[in-house]
Amino acid sequence: MSALRYITAGESHGRALIGILEGIPAGLDLSSENIDKDLKRRQGGYGRGGRMKIESDHATILSGVRWGKTIGSPIALMIENKDYKNWNEGMSPDADAEGSIPAVTRPRPGHADLAGALKYNQQDIRNILERSSARETAMRVALGAVTKSFLAEFGISVGSFVIQIGSRIAVKSPDMKEKELLKTFSQAEKSAVRCPDETASGKMVRLINKARKEGNSLGGIFEIFVTGIPIGLGSHTQWDRRLDGRLAQAVMGIQAIKGVEVGLGFEMGRKSGSELMDEILYSQIAQDNSKKAGFFRRTNFAGGIEGGITNGMPIILRAVMKPIPTQRKPLRSVDLITKKSVEAAYERSDICAVPAAGVIGEAMVALTIAEAFMEKFGGDSMGETRRNYDSYMEYVRKF
Image (tube, rainbow, N blue to C red; front, side):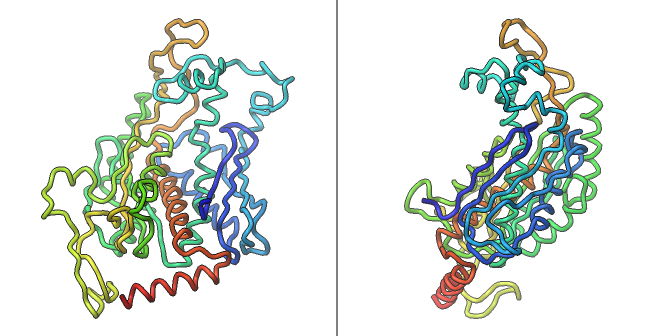
């Protein structure tokens, strides 16, 4: 059994979202306020839709925490959907409410609508779109916030920033050092589109405004990083233990994500080996006033992972999000029942959700890193995990 596991439940317009996280050691300081900060970040970002004006997400801790500290048992969280008051019959679990709202029968291109309806034998697409909606990611962000608090106890930070929306690109270095990444993240948090470049941010906002007027939507690219990561998380021994593969799957599991790369990613296919391998160096004294003594690298083209194992450099991931499929000017479709050509159904939606997707990406990466961290160090209490971690880090320093 995995050292850490989690699951979510709930529909977009249902009563609430529920999440359960198991495997966090006892003794971690945790409060709803820790979690709500990231929930607020997910709701922000220029280009979000009307739903974010209704919701004000708050995580209620139902179990696993007593007097501000985790107690080792499963942590259960709940986020109420304020919009449920408008859907209490349409999303009611009671049989006598059946038919209280019209069925959705016009599948939207780019969504799970048609494939899901056929797979689960549903003639009302709402039974598919409610769960496939990205509203579910609010709970993943909440669970990820818990693991961020856990990782922070060991000096590990997870962040993200937007590098492209539509055709607007923020030029950046593909090989940022730890301090540069943290500074870039700080700059991005001040931007309406979570982009660290002020000029590019303004162009992105204008592009979103243009798409809104045209009834269109936009995608883009965001970068996720992890700093303070120790050498040795993940494994080369089996394909499904390789950490880069696990991270890619976790980020690909976010709605509308269509590609993930690690380090230089696809750029590696356009260069020779001598240009992009991160040479290994060693020193008995600290390097550049920022590196600890021992093995070190001057570059990080691999994105912090070699052979499926962390190498001590920052983890760098990038992900591409396709434009939101729901269009204010509906695309062509076919009615599920009549089989006649129709316009696809319209559900209230975002114009651009790339800034929010970066926050969700942080959560999925934090959950995956925390899982690998607990596999490596274990422990039922924070004290035990700390002892295991400190012992290993001392071994690495003396190797």
